[in-house]
Length: 211
Length: 151
Image 1 (cartoon, rainbow over the protein chains, first blue to last red):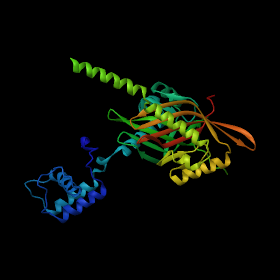
Image 2: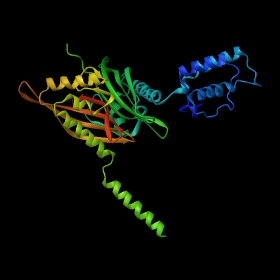
Image 3: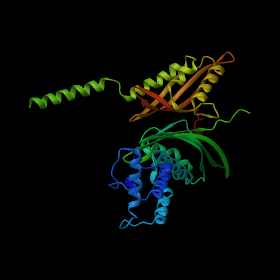
Image 4: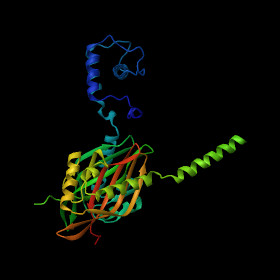
């Protein structure tokens, strides 16, 4: 399954629904060669439909009811399998937020590329590289500080680069009291050696509208 | 033997030639400087033309994110109106290139006139750029006031 995650022939939900309709309506049509690469879009979709159903089919026997059940499963179940750069990059952002909330500087730093640059919310210094990033987050250790992600925007720049930008809110413990700090962030998430990591992170306080 | 020598020679010439021409880092630096110069020309349309159609801008002192062309233009129209004679001077900048994506981040200082007095606003920025043909277009621009030094 994993090898197929970024397969360009992966089909989306509307296409899956088309598959469902096609397969339940027409039981006789079957491509000559299951999984054959067709260059025509519709035929390719049909082949993918069949390729995914074929494994459930024994001796060419499959009642329409069984077919419907499998087709329905095929449409709704494998949502995870269609993850692309946008989903992968957002998963990294969520991991970052969780690591911050865990107050674990080493775990946070591992989410960045070794040469990443961080413009942290509370320091005028640009933190460059793993060591500097660990140092920046070290004061959060054991504080109980938290981070909660808010509205985000995802801009896919290519197969290996995604910008995720939006709002998040820190809750920093100051003299035993939680102090909310609404902030905004931009992260450039890049894929290197098959792994998605943060290459750049700019964080700043959310400017409050003038009253 | 002669062919090998020719190959080595042509490879060497090629490497020298590419080394002499501007690399992507220089191109990104040039695109950034162009943004700075254009900002000083007081023309919203010229500035907006340097951003990709789907670009996002976090303005230095803006509570809202500008995520479409009209909002982006509106930001610069307002900025030029409330900050007469707006100029920007770049300080330290770090550039990273990831194929056709690049980041330029660092410090810049805005200067403008307020109530007849010259003012400055030190800030920091992150520009994410994507290569579109020969041009590097800004796809994300995060600008923020300088945080106070740690106590």
